[in-house]
Image (cartoon, rainbow over all chains, first blue to last red; front, side, top):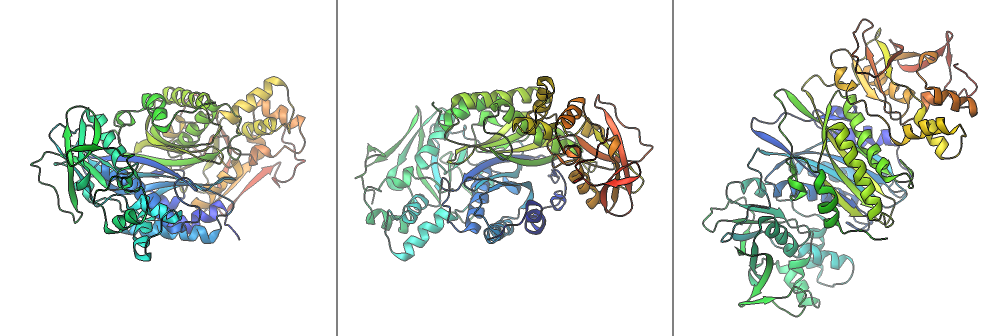
Length: 317
Length: 317
């Protein structure tokens, strides 16, 4: 195996990804583009470690794209539209040029899909696992960003798309779960290459009262909104949208019924809105799953009773 | 030893460092403050790995402050004034709460010194060495940022402060060099806690034609300016400013005469300016060390002849 030096990696692989103001990565820093009047920059930063946040033998292009999307999801949760990013990678000894080229091809593909550019970064070596850190920058109308703290008793609770696929996909990759090849691919793809709801987030400005993305798991992430808003939530477990592949996997496994509520990595958006709010149609299904109540905590209900998320035998379909 | 969970680390240690728009780190992302009319955001990102960019047993507060300053130095090299930063840390199993508290105290101290705020970040675990990544954000008058590509034949070449201390300090820490306790402290301090020339960089706008910081070493970093500017440089080796501690260390060691030209981590600024430019006085010594010439490459000269940076026996004092 062989690996290019830092300068060659930058000039040959990364410079072609650089946006205006990043000067082909020739300088110490980048000058960010000018926003429209009234817009503000939004910044977020997530890190991923091989063996912790992705599997070391995951395809490198998908590792890159997941890293991008995890961060764009954070921007979307604030209602921000993505503009660009800075990337730091600490490369382990077994990242050769093939790995790097595939990784960079993944970056290029998602830059194209999301209309974003590379603004800078750093490439270093580590004797440990591959460690990646990305800072994503987006824009939002100043003062209108979506926050976690605006949910009010009486609001409805919504989630986009469906939840549970990513956690079940990870179980497939870890060979803890066996499903048909088609369902396995659906679930694994969802784990490795989440959507980032970049159009939905900005479109929710004006209707959502609170928003956040589902990274830690539906229950935990709803809990963040509840706590920051000083309110509670009642979620109708039977209303939570679950894909056909996830239903098949839950049926094939054992004790997985509540995994869609606790598993992470779905990168859907959860949000609250007044019950009479008109929700945007950007081609992403939105499902009303519950309501904001006075009090605190998030309770999952079924047929009038609360269910425990540790209650493995509960079946919601 | 014990270590708090991610949420406790964020709420107890990091939230108090958060700036306006970072919402006490309660949300997915931060909304950056509004700049004055005509100003642009400048962004840079550097990563550091224990055992590679710092020593694992370096004091944690100094690791934090070096990480901050390395990035602020990149902003200064573009003429930008620092505003804030996002931080990702991947913590190894041996980072306990004591380590974390000292690290955060270092961040707080440099926030105070440089007038900057925390805008966000991520805290994860790694089975490998501590890996840190910081994105620094600053501001500059749009279109007036300092670049590397503006040096012109006939310009003078300048460096701030003095060079060589950091590389010699690292040799002291690695016990490859023995000097008196006072000099050792000076050199080691310089390695562990570099200055960042945050006032000099912005003050050079209007006089410097090209600028960059000394991170890879004087010769390498002058080489970046020369290459990007399509010019060459002749540096008078005897004019390069070297501290008394460095002179003593070079005399005490063997073959260290050219280390101030090749050693990294000084975080001074090197810049070019027309010979008749009036340079700013911000309390940092500026030394003219050479000139920009037609051609390419960086040559170090002494008494009319070129010296080799691998020529260990050359003595410049």
